[in-house]
Image (cartoon, rainbow, N blue to C red):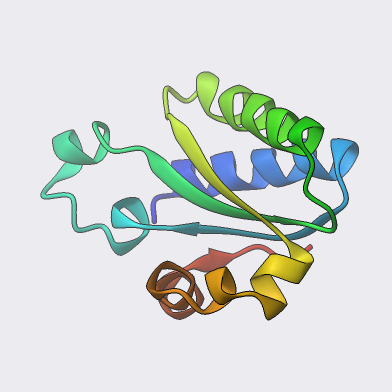
Length: 112
């Protein structure tokens, strides 16, 4: 994960902490693995992020989407959030899905 990507992730965390009950935040995917075949290709890939909120409502989803856009805009990075409630992440089938297991294994988590 590049320093620019990490800065965008930190910016997203700061924005979210002001607006939602943020429980967890992590980057994952090709930009974290750096397997996007070179610097030029990396800029074509979005920054996948996991957002875990205490609760999940349509308003929380909208806020997460707005914050993701704002965090990546100046850096020219499209931030693509995957959003879970704490309950979903810890106790539902989605929380043990292949995607969730991959995020747990290779994700870069921010300390909240």
